[in-house]
Image (cartoon, rainbow, N blue to C red):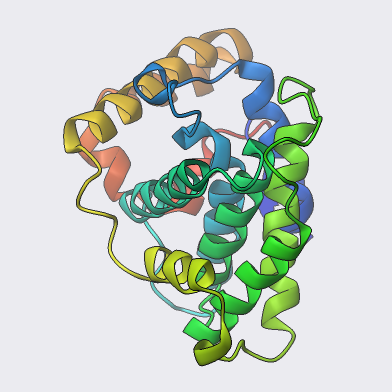
Length: 247
């Protein structure tokens, strides 16, 4: 797809829904975890499969339109929102973990696509209708679960954008609460040190993977970049992801 989303480690350029499935599968294959939140289940890696390809897609689309592109800092802020929505849903205990990932992915993806509050609530309402109960028999360790959850979230966000907005006054309380998290600032109860630690863990894991996967010249360039954290978070997302693909 022209100006589509890239899948790190590959040469794929896909529509955001299919890219989300691929990135979700890639994250699952790496065994990404966040020990600090393992007691709750939710972690940044769960929803990154939706957030990263949507951010890359929108950042690439902004270039020919001469619009400001999202930065890695923006990507991290949205990742915090997605994690907090997933954590909030899991605390409620109504749905299984994969459904919580889908709902969070739908909410933040809709907001990233520039949806109005009503359309964000519509995306959440559709996702809630498709969510499985917490006692559903599904193995979270199945390889396809993460990819399916995040890609379904992105797909539902796009479906909501194509339809009418939800009636805010009639929207369920959960939908209004989630929409508020998706469209507002990252929650203040997210410990900054925890977010930093998670980000550092992701970057350290990336540094380890780089040497074994990319050609020497590309690996050296990536290692030099990752040594300058301030430069990384200030980069446009599409430029950062461009360094992670195989041409």
